[in-house]
Amino acid sequence: MDINNRTVLIVGGTSGIGLGLARRFAAAGSTVVVGGRTTAGVTDLETVTIDVTDPASVERARDEVLAAHPDLDTVVTMSGVMFIEDLRDPAHFAAAHETVAVNLLGTIRVIDAFTPHLVEGGNGTIITVTSGIAFLPFPSMPAYAASKAGVHAYTEALRAQLAGTGVAVTELVPPAVATAGQESVNPAALPLESFLDEVVALLAQNPTPHEILVEGVRMHRWAERDGTYAALVERRSQALSSLPGRH
Image (cartoon, rainbow, N blue to C red; front, side):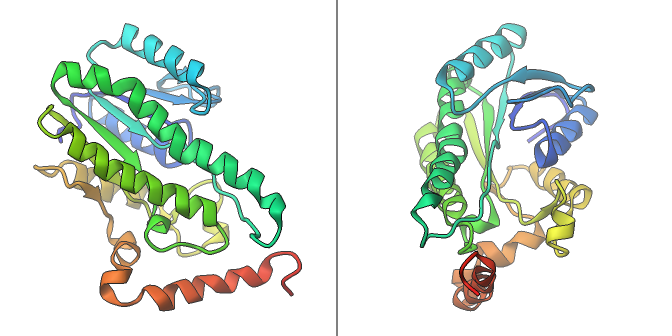
């Protein structure tokens, strides 16, 4: 896809990967709007307030964006939350509920809001954002893994259903990326700018890949195929010992 002359909405774009990607689109010459629950921290890009768990908020944001940018042709939906959960404690359900509401249902809600506009225009791109954890879960973050696996499956179905409409569907699959202090939690996290360099290069390919897989996420994406899945999940399960009551 040509990122130089597009009109882009990035929902969940007020920080981290989303904001970094928004700035890359803008630097390439695209018109960019970023959306989130709180937009006060973004002063260099156009913003819209949106809560993906609130249908009225999503509809209002859609109407606001399309009124200002009737030529909108790219929607990136990447709002997400991540929690550690102890599945032996029923109190984890609140975290699981919020995770699914934001990560999976929020993604579907945003896609539903903008798909009619894109289909009517006969062109454009929807970019969903999953995670390497969708394919190689961390047992300490079960609902996050499940929600992102759900987004992956939904993306596959969406691509099939929109075939022939002119609307492309692409899935961005990040590994751990050094944002929001992750570099101190996970020293192996990929530097944000290095990640974005790879993402932009992959997006610019013609045709654009159905899945944007930077080098650092391929071991996660293809673990089952490569026969490394069980060993890697077992290694990740070691983190369960840090949960309260597991010592």
